[in-house]
Length: 140
Image (tube, rainbow, N blue to C red; front, side):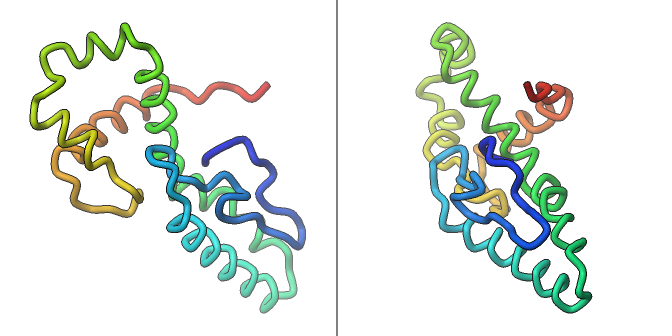
């Protein structure tokens, strides 16, 4: 998930929201992620207390990856593309004012839970398909 804030969990603590790097990678919004990760962490803390075991908390990073990992990976790749003017110019050649491209950029999802984005959904799904094929870089 977002950022390099690690670890996100310990034997008796969990980091959520902005502190955990849970910020929408496309638009910087963080309230939804703070709420979603806080609620997830609270359910794991409740389970840990109910079972008198720290082990439920240890599932937190895996759940975050399953929930947000691909979305954040697509965002990182998207940021790399738009950060290269020559590549962006080629990708948008003749399409800069096309309704599908401008609609996508103007309505990129604000939460990965969004289900209907129109043109943005088509672009995201294509990018997600490609992102699944690209291995994550190894941590240094």
